[in-house]
Length: 289
Image (cartoon, rainbow, N blue to C red):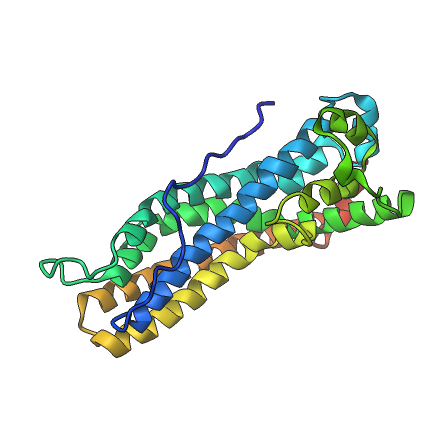
């Protein structure tokens, strides 16, 4: 299976611009939203390209059966936890960041002929991409509980089998790391890789995997703040406010659809199995080889 490689979402730097005495509260919120999205993308992309792809490769036998066995996860388990659903989210965010570049380039209000400012531009973008975002997040969120349960069970089994991670491996040269990682569990591999990546250092795998679940609630909080400050600055008749309100409504609708999809899936499981099947139950059907 071909390994997914993600390019940088943008060659432009996403960071807070120097503030001036004319910077409005709405501008602060817009900058925070854009910067937060880029930071979130960087976390997920780094996780997938440096760790998830490596785990997938090892589990599929790329460096031998011994390494696949030592890893402690099957290809099926890896795909359920870190696979195509997470890749789809990253691809979607990448496309959205390209649209958000205009908010990095444009610092002044949009020409008066449009009668909107950067908050209005952001709102237009989020309204436009809300459905696509929902389609990307829906499968991941629907199966997240099972994936998280599976990861917890895998960690427990791995901890019992191999309680102590290897030490001193940061000094191992790149050209012999392939041989070294043949003997690593997926947790030990995470320790090796995360310690070498500033974005991932000190984080647990589950702290990364839950980020997409929290993303839509975070969008709603951001736009709740933006709606309040735009209403305060412009009033409810201003085109920017109307656009922000429209985006807020679109994001709420998509969030509701995601939650409805999760509830339908859980109801289906209850009818079929008598309960919602968690990751531990799934593990019984996908044990490591």
